[in-house]
Length: 128
Image 1 (tube, rainbow, N blue to C red):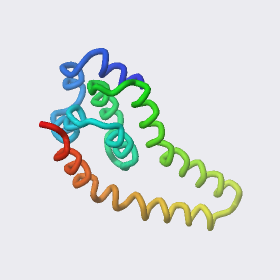
Image 2: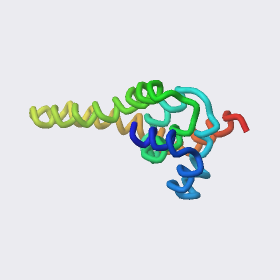
Image 3: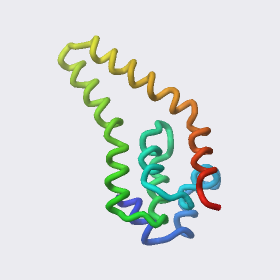
């Protein structure tokens, strides 16, 4: 929320100076895109630079409360899974921990592998 607030307070010119040109080129469409669904999906995709995404969402016309709700919901799977893995491992239930890891890998690998295609799809849907 702090990075979102900084983006909102300081504006696009300052945020642009915080992110590398490469990141801006890859993720700059977020500034133009509309909709909380994009925010939710971006927080689900492993490997995307979410710290910079917070700044970028801050310069969009999205309210802080919508951003907070959507980004939190998108982060829940990434927080819950390691907690569940740790709990199963601590309890000695290694099979459950391995199965949970296998399910997460089966879901995350395709998202990670296709992350550029997913981002390109959203980039193509944003207004120019």
